[in-house]
Image 1 (cartoon, rainbow over the protein chains, first blue to last red):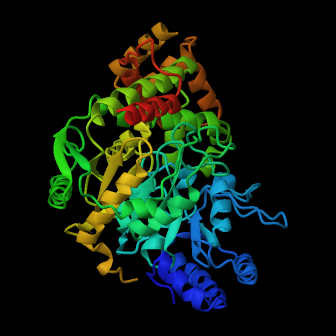
Image 2 (cartoon, rainbow over the protein chains, first blue to last red; image 1 turned 180 degrees about the vertical axis):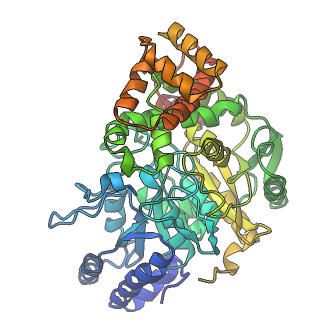
Image 3 (tube, chains in turn yellow, orange; image 1 turned 45 degrees about the vertical axis):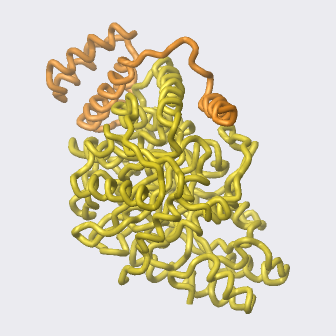
Amino acid sequence: MIDFKSISEIKGLVLNSPNFILEIVNDVVDKLNTIGKTLDAVKYTNSKFSLDQASKLIQEKQYDLPLFGVPLAHKELFQRIQDNGIGWPNEAGSKSREGSKSDQTAEVISLLDKAGSIDCGRLVSVEYAFGVTGHNEYAGTPKNPWNQNYVCGGSSSGSAAIVASGIIPAALGSDTGGSVRLPSAACGLVGIKPTQGLISRAGVFPLSNSLDTVGPLTRSVTDAAKILQIIAGNDHKDLSSVSVKIPEYISEMEKGIQGLKIGLPKNYFLEGSDKGVSENTLSAFRLSEKLGAKCKEINIPNIETANDLNMLLISTEAALEHQKVALERHRDFNQQTLMRILSGVFTSPDEYEKLKKYRIHFIKEVIYKVFDDLDMFIAPVWPCYLPTIKDSDAGASKEAASLVRRIGHNTRPINYLGLPAVCLPTGFDPNGLPMSIQLIGKPFSEDLLLRAASSLEKEYSFWDKKPKI
Amino acid sequence: MEGSRLWFSFVIIYNNFNVLILREIIKMNISNLSTKIISELKKAKIDDEQIDNVFNISLKQLKTLESKTIPKDTASSVQDVFSDFLTFNTDD
């Protein structure tokens, strides 16, 4: 019915016949419960709520809403409480929270409601959003729609699987060390990791207060820009939220890549990635130049330790938030989640202060040096070809720590820097799984990243091909 | 506290993170944050091998942090750095 349709195509359908929204919602919820569950990607649906929301929208006839009648579903970290006081499940993908319910509605979910979207459910997350491969023994390990033997990446694994399978045009995820970009890249999606403070995290299950961000996963740059336009903005309920002027992303995007200054880091990112992945990134850099960008090679100072320091900051803050439950109910945790939370308990208060202070110093050092005469730089997302679910099931073995470290090699430093990034699919690896790049910009330059991504997207035409489910 | 942690780290590294040695160290009643935490983990019945593993991970990452120096004039928040940068870019 709306398979693989964009936001504007869906809006076109429902504006012609508003009652059609009800049929669409029924179809989407049905597909989430069939295809979605086959992919182990769906946590919760509530067809009565979704149909009631659709009926109310039809009655109110607010046809000019930007997402009028557009069905969405989101990572299970995003809370919702209904008007009748019933909270949706809030288990964060963990048996340790079995039966927990939402006690509020996340700010971004309220914004999407106000924009006219229909909330069709919650999608599987890695436990506590703390994992890069997508494995989850309790909630299920989502299968990649392009080849179900392969991982979706984590931690917004269910969101990526469902958007890539064409059921809905967009879903929200969260990104603390790569959790929007890794699943987006694994499933051939556009994913936005926003500048720290651009989008409210109020009502979203926390992993790391300093590093958590919220962003959309979509099949096109335009749809990503449309969702970003709705959810970006200051929120007093999130203390990290900042007040900045929000650009008109769609109109800015149409200016294209011409004249943008794009860098290719000579150090760290390509050195730490496999040959095929590096070549894919280099090829995107050359294409950018061909399309009119001003391209040059750059160096990112002192980036080598940012991955480890980001891992330490996540673990430390995850331990501060969740240590009590991790100790009391450790048998209810996946071993890898437990390992990562507990590795944060050894950080002393002085070390935690130093960790946060050094981060501030590092951000200042990098942004003034790198973006002095540059709009953005380009890097891979995954450092290797996508692994299978079986091959990357490391649990809490000795190898798990190095696997987790390796997969986040290109994404965690960007969270540590607090910078915005847009993940863009570029083609397929030798196993037929998606490959991607990320564009990383200066603070609050999402508009410029979308400009470049939009021009590159037209050249790659990635979604001309569709997964066979 | 830092001194006892260094000594503790040395013993751990010297013994190649051996679980048995870790148990011995725990028995030594060293008064520092790490031993206190390890005993809390043991009290919660976390597996010895898991304790050894997480301590090892933490130790490596904290050593990376230890090597960093921070100038005295560092801003107080990421938001302040971003805000100054935006002003700098506009003025530019």
